[in-house]
Every structure is written in structure tokens, then in C-alpha cells.
Figure 1 (cartoon, rainbow, N blue to C red):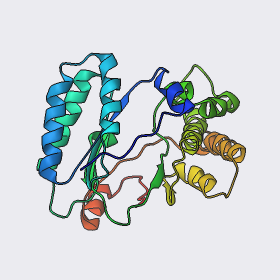
Figure 2: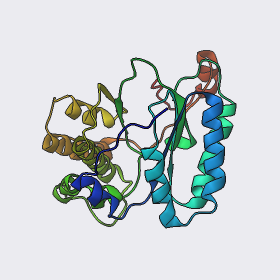
Figure 3: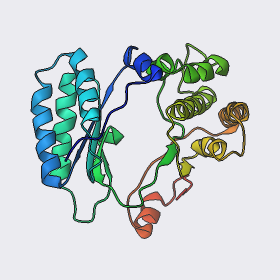
Length: 258
């Protein structure tokens, strides 16, 4: 199959390519699972011979060679060694897939594979409390001025416990808002958005129910209120039948949330 014609890189693309970042995205496509597996195995073996700088070259080459084929895989990698591990993990997951599996995330979402459908859509999932620890914006803010502006205006603390509820909630909302601004700059739009707990506020912002400043203000107020008025505790996840859960939690001061 002939590769599609390629356009000259835009000024933004050249700027992004020349800036520092923490990871690379390796993307693959193929006509069948067997062909995809073969490409992943070859890439996993090849990455062990690369330097850190060459991982960026590999990511660019793989992206250039995509042919819009139905079977796809991707991995976020941070080093040649990490790339080899992630790609071998993808091969194992591909071998273990079920006949009806759709897109499947592996290793906490750093890799995924699957087969596209005719009516595939993009959806955004916004995280709740417990996501990350940083307040600077990292590579996102370094590479996208739109994201850097969000972090500059958020007034997040630069020290102390960034996982404390009153800090974590505005921090995570800031990250979601900055991520949206970066996606907007790249022309990536979603058809639907959902959020987990705190992430519902970001999803409402995406839907137009509130602007960015209201989102950040709401996250600050929510985090402060929960820190001041919530009792100490944490979440436990049980994967069991209702009767078994009732037996396990009988007499305990717990609230069943779902």
C-alpha cells in the first residue's frame, strides 16, 4: 500500500520537535493481529540498540509510516530500555487477547492496542483525586505555551504536600485544563467527555457549563471544604458479589459507594 503524501511540518511542529520532553509516543498499525505482533517484536528488539536521542527519531519515523490500518498499538516510553519493556508487554497482551476484545489499555494506560471500528469516536476521561503530584506542568507546560499560561495563572504551591486534598484538587483541575488547551492547539476534539469524581468538574467545563477560571475556583473551594469537613479515611476497592461484600464489611464504619 502506498504511503499517503506528507505535508511540510508546521512552525508549531518544528517548535515542539526542538523542545525538551519527558517521553515519546510510539505508534503502530497493521492489517492483522499477526502483522501487528511482528512489527511490535521487531521494534522491541531494535530499541535495545538505540540511544535516548534516537527514541525521538524512532517515534517520528513510526508516525510517518502509519497507513491508517485497522489494527493499532501505541506505547508511551521514557527510554530505550523502557521502550523494549513496554513493547514486549504489548506483545504478551496481544497474544492473550480475547476474541471479542476491543481497544485494551495495558500497564496502567501507558500502552494500548486494538482494532478500530467504522464509527470510532474520541472521548476524554478526566481524572479524580489521586492523580500525579507535580504543580509545574512538566513537559506539557514546557512545550505548549497555552498550557504554561494555565499553570502560570493557577497560583499552585511549589512546595509542601501536593497530595493534600486542598492542594491536590486544584492541582489536578489545572492539569486537566492545561491538557485541554494543548489538545485544542493540536486540533484534537472529542465527541464525549466523562470525569471521575473531581474530574466531573473538568468534564462540565469541556461541555461548556463553566469557563476555565470557574473550574479552577470550584476545585479550590471543593478541595478546601473536603479537607476541612471530611473525616479521616480512604477508599477500599472490593471485587466481589454483593452478599460477599456485605459479609466482609459487616460491623465496619464504611460507606458503600458503588
